[in-house]
Length: 271
Length: 291
Ligand SMILES: Nc1ncnc2c1ncn2[C@@H]1O[C@H](COP(=O)(O)OP(=O)(O)OP(=O)(O)O)[C@@H](O)[C@H]1O
Ligand SMILES: [Mg+2]
Image (cartoon, rainbow over all chains, first blue to last red; front, side, top):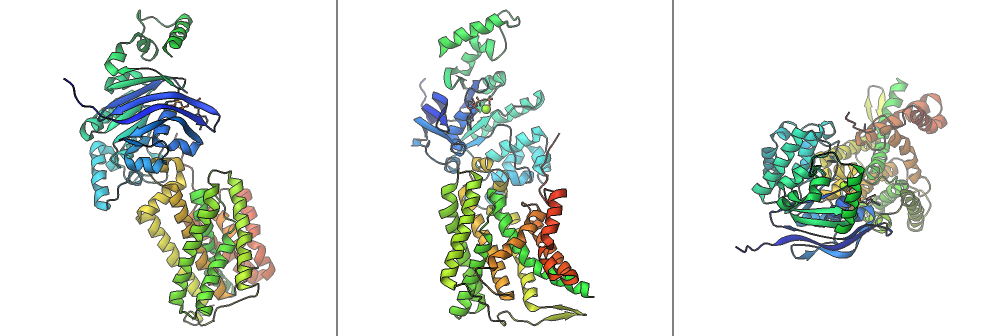
């Protein structure tokens, strides 16, 4: 059966420099299709956050620039647009480290996420939706956000992104620093958002196991390049991924320095 | 009794300082820029109002709103022509640019309104000196205080109840995060400059009405608001109000009871003490840190 799939977001061979001299991305391509969950894995410093910021336009505020390649969203080139325009088109980035407006209340934080031109009724409708997903936020809505717990802040930050009804949500390490039980909860909600609201997701994660579990497709980045990609269930079976991202090795023994060298060799082969 | 009189006069005068202080605080909160042209901007606002009243022969209820509209335009122009081109430059560069702007504005004022003192007709605002017991309150100070309170109430409403107000509060906390929320922060900066120019213009008018306007000394009024701003902790709007009133009171009491010259500098002496013992000001935002 051949089904028409549309990629709503396509990143084509982008190169990114910071301050005109530091090259961080060296030709990255990826695509996100409608209603898809795509995860982006890779070690620290691989360029995952930079990729997300290139898409959302936030790069420009950090003296970063897409110098080559392009980014296309629903048939429109967006890599030269400013962040607030890209957000209005329907791409919302949830930043790394779940930053909140500390001095605003939880509900004011959520309201900050509202982008539409509708009135108070429209906002209320969206707020109800978020409170439906995260009932806990309703009881915390008048609290100063800076005093919420990490898990509550993560809910709020995802809720805030939902307030704009995004077509694509870029999530940067939502599980970072959360307890395992909370992580499970967050991933469940992410899946739920994707299924109920048809929001496409590009998910950056260190927690590869969980990310592969909910993703449809997966990219692996190293050193500013995509070194591997494929459907998530296929990558889960890949020996390299098993060894270096899922921490499983064939014999189940601890990895030794030799394995790491072997990995380096293989990595070169990959890239 | 005399003490009470100085206290009351101080509070009423302090309202004007509070308006200047909040003009500085608004811009600092949103952009981290300390606007050294605040004095010239407020004097310019005062002159606009003067021109409508004296040159145009218009009643105050048209002149003052007219001056505020002019202030909005000036605020927008300053943001567009001076600040926006410098958006990604080091903060120091931008602050120096506000100094340059102050010189430029002073030059324009000298050209248009000359260097001589000008004043408003004394009966511009209705009312007479009010006596409460033995305490006299001149009508221009009562008006100044009333206008200050209305302006601050308006600001509070704007920040707490409107969507743009919320965005401004967001932007004052985190630029990147605000952009990620789809806020056009450059627009917010422009709105901030307009709002600051409006507050300054109110102060300029009230100051001009109380004493007189001159390009040489009206801008110096802003200097008196600096201690108020620092007292308030640079980022706090209620702090600007209380700081302004406090400066008025200190100046009134020290100037009245001890020595008028000492009154002029008393606020600065106190400011030094505050900076030494509580450098974040009395109302500065406490950084929230969870452990
Ligand atoms: N604003 C910046 N200016 C200069 N270099 C930067 C900037 N931001 C990131 N970099 C560099 O770009 C590289 C990639 O950073 P990026 O944040 O994209 O990595 P990441 O894959 O998200 O890593 P992590 O998993 O640690 O979050 C790093 O070497 C980093 O030092
Ligand atoms: Mg990162």
